[in-house]
Image 1 (tube, one colour):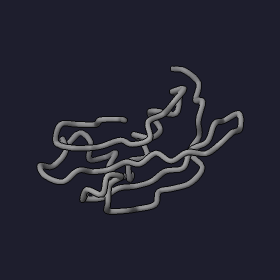
Image 2 (cartoon, one colour):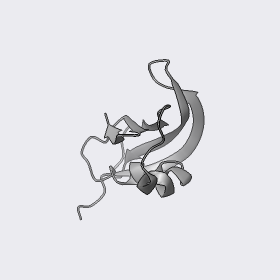
Image 3 (cartoon, helix red, strand yellow):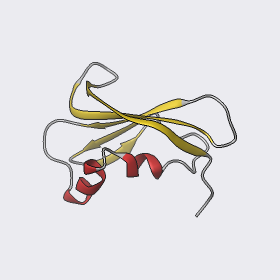
Image 4 (tube, one colour):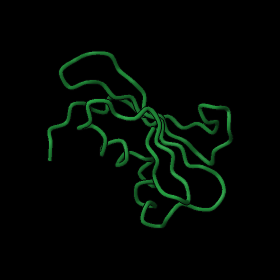
Length: 92
């Protein structure tokens, strides 16, 4: 496993409207920053409406999306948004 380049520094903050103004079931915003210093950014985890997400995602959703954010901390450029839907997880 590669070493994390980012760390979670705050969150989650809950919200119910997506970035594009669409309704979502629930969303959580997590603040992250580079481990070697630099500007913070926000990763939003959004649970889409419609059919429920796959049951294997339930533990991560009970943790308010933190495992999904943690999975991206080794990336050079973590996603700004992680959408969870009946199709699974889509980072953007």
